[in-house]
Image 1 (cartoon, rainbow, N blue to C red):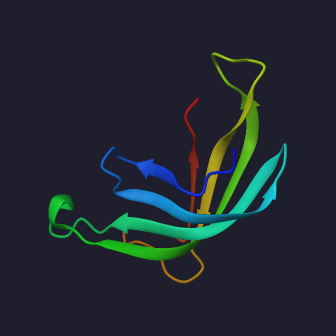
Image 2 (spheres, one colour):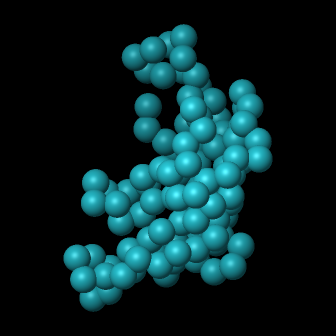
Length: 99
C-alpha cells in the first residue's frame, strides 16, 4: 500500500504527512515527496497553528511483522526537510516505525 497521508504523532494529528507522491516503492525501500504538517504548539498545542514544510520521506529496513511473520513492512522512516523544518525537528529525522 502506498499511502498518500500518514499520521506521525498523537491521535490528534499534531504531526502528519500529506500529499505523498511515491517515486520509488520496492522491497528494500520507498521514497516520496510531500508536505509535513506540524502543530507549532505555541503557546500550547490546543492553541497552536499548523505549519507546512516540504519533505522527502524514505521508508526502509524491511522486516517481518511480529504477529504475521510472512508479511514484510518497512521498519524505519527518515524525513528530510530541504527548505526549513519545524523548531523541534532537525533537518533530517530518522525514527523506527512500530511493529
